[in-house]
Image (cartoon, rainbow, N blue to C red; front, side, top):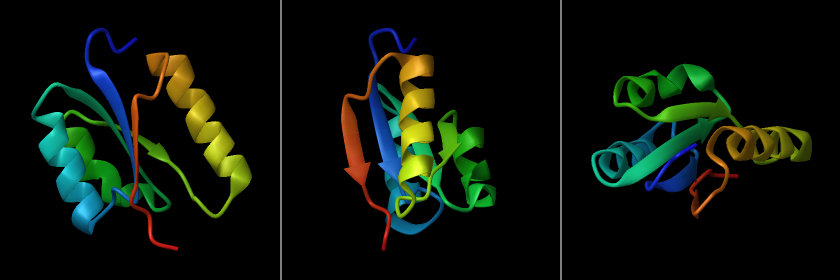
Length: 86
């Protein structure tokens, strides 16, 4: 469970603006879950202390799995930054 930190889920966090935003938010009072289709790109976020998950926003089953896993791990999603390009 995330405790007092707000849980932020960021789609498209494997590179660019999503990666930078996730890394910056993780420095503060947020528990960040960075997601991407290509999970190899999430290694930097894991090193920065973020949780990561595979998520393809064009695939409803993938989205359902990611949300279900996040709720099971952290109990909630406080903020969704839908950054993934499609």
